[in-house]
Amino acid sequence: MKKLIKTVFALFALALLIPACDVLEEPFIEGAEDEKKILLFEVYDVVGLVDEDAKTVRLDFPEGTDVSHLTPTILISTYATITPASGVPQDFTEPVCYTVTAKNGTTAQYQVEAVVHDADNEKSILSFVIDGEEGVINEVAKTVLVYMPEGTDVTHLVPTIEVSEGATVSPASGEAQDFTTPVAYTVSAPNGTTAVYTVTVIVDDGVVTLTGKTVLIKDFTGARCVNCPEAADYAHNLQHQLDEDHIFIMSVHAGYLAQPAGQFPHFLTDEGTAWYNNNNSNPLFSVDHVALTEGNTLFVEQIDAPVAAALQEEQTFEIVLTPRYDEASRRLDVGVRVLPLVALDGQFYITACLVEDHIVGWQTTPSGIDKEYDFRNVFRGTLNGAYGDAFEDSHVDPDDTFHFSYDTELDAAYNADECYLMVYVYEKTQGDKILQTAVTKIK
Image (tube, rainbow, N blue to C red):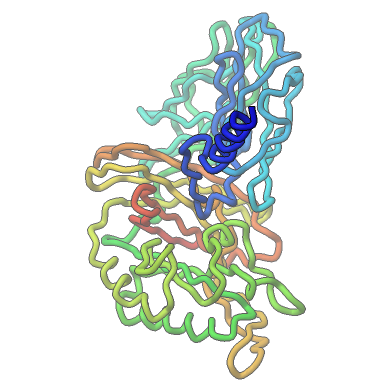
């Protein structure tokens, strides 16, 4: 009996030394600590329509569905959490707010709406076409954007409109309209209820990327970084030496030395912090997100060769920007058209940024604090998140065209006369390599 007990004890001790299963721990993905998106929202095989820009989710159910006790299955960004949680029943007779919290504590709120279809209550615009150009319909925001070719006279356009079965629309399909300003279309359901859509026509007379590759340098800096002004001067001198027009330097304030204190300016952003990852010093740089060292950052003296090499790369995309800024409301509406110039395989993303130039404030320098320092091209934030929007996950061809629209309200402290829209396209599988950049003033 004692021998048996000893044998069992020995086997138990050995078992403690042997892992239960041979599973490798998933490596941490740098940059993902800021991700806070709803990737999938599904209820009873009904997949919700996620609008990442508007932060809305729409669930469409057939007539008669009881939405007072639905249990959703929700997929969110890696490392993020969501409240209410996936698998928790909810009453969707009214829209429900879901909060996604990233690993770094930042949050995003989504409004989830359940729509039960009733033939007598249907009142949607299903398609809106002008001269072959199909409008982009946002069913949640009740907006339609139609992009027309350069030179289009918008004062007399005739749309073809398809609406829900049994519904009517006013103004009617086939009726000419002046789209110099947005036009309201009212769709009436058979039961008499209505929905109003705002239709905006954007003429594609935007600013086109210069011929050739435009290189983006992200200068990770800070107002309390004593060596950062000299590094910024180095980068700008390199820009002047190599190609003034095809290099854009964006100052991204991130890290400990960018933390606001006293009279030092507050230029920190969630997106800039996400790009900076876990670096612990400034100044640092990235050149089209490509670097010679670990991660995607370089010391300033290392950027010469990567910038020169990037300038020689083939231009693979053309980016057309159409900003519309309203002085009174400080609202900025942006139309972006992306055109591949060659056939490419990969996962392609677009990121739209707001940049403000010539901001005067305190900056630490080797000779002391410069209280009248001219901050150049300061990154103020993105219009579509730190990592932008995916628009193709496998292949693009030269005859493809991708349209995007964004909007934001400029902070009252920003000088609109010095604000720029900066948009870049990058490829995910090659270390987020930026393939093309375009820049224009917003007004």
